[in-house]
Length: 473
Image (cartoon, rainbow, N blue to C red; front, side):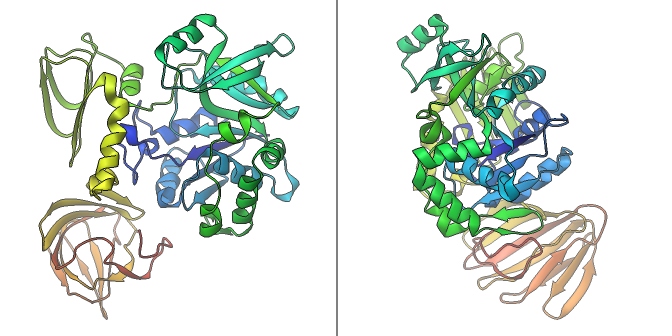
């Protein structure tokens, strides 16, 4: 049996301002109507030899993972929660440890959640083709036949073919080359791009990890042994997993093992690692432009424009990326979009919220959108899903005024409990315990006006939360 392991721990900083740490690119519908996570899960679903997937993600994203997979009709076997990111090596290790419980030893198919593959059937056929090699103890990497002298990817040099098949021994992995070297790799026909997708038996990977990266395996074993399982999630121990060495599958195992083989793929793969990559896989108009949202492009060519909340107009420009969101606008040369990460680094160094989260912040119960704010007030639009509720909470520094815009609201305020409907309002004083619930069948929308000396989200004291959150999220 093949067990897909979907790695959903990345932050996608090169796709800022659309992708941010609290809502990264794998949860966005970048190439079609489905999100990248949904596309990854659906790509391998519905085959008799493939089981329900394991998903490894940051614990902060657990409700987004669960909701998006539910919406796609995918029921994961387990969602493993990382308290901190430790790259793909530890993520694959804890997935393998989970797969090995009760003596099982399935073949794991490691899939990053943020890849695009145009030829899904071709990819499935390749998985079936290499499955016997995984059963025989090989560690398979999926190489992408290069179409351009790409300098942003690592490469794999193929060695001798195995049994006159397309599968070859791996001669060596090479780092991201310069343009001249990349051109030479392309012309030789011996090299493929390193996709970051792998396939191996759980026991074989763990054995190689014990031989090649024993400290990593030991830390993962300890964090997994101390994990706790609730109804929906497996929580790794925070301290023990934080102590785990940070490394990729490639560096920890694949570049050192003598069991590695590669199968070359021509399936329309892209890792959607930058805005130029997204432009390259999209449907362009006659001028080479891709536009999303309300866009007017005049005398504009080979440009990507994404207008999320308002009209964006371009005049007389070429080879640009223009991305507009509710709280930030990016304008960049398409040739330099890899440097967008430097913007994110500056935002984080300045402790600006735009580096981590959007104006609209998603919660398991719905979302809130910060409409306006000054030093002593903040206005939010809040949506609570039918049947959902915020935590029972209080604030030390702010009072709140709630106005119901649509739907019905159940208010618990101190010892009181009452119902509000459209155009009705209430007031929550500083220090009073309260809870907002939606007892209806349509979304509840309210306008919240906060006033006080301190308005940040960490001024929340939770008393009870149906989603198992502490004061941090």
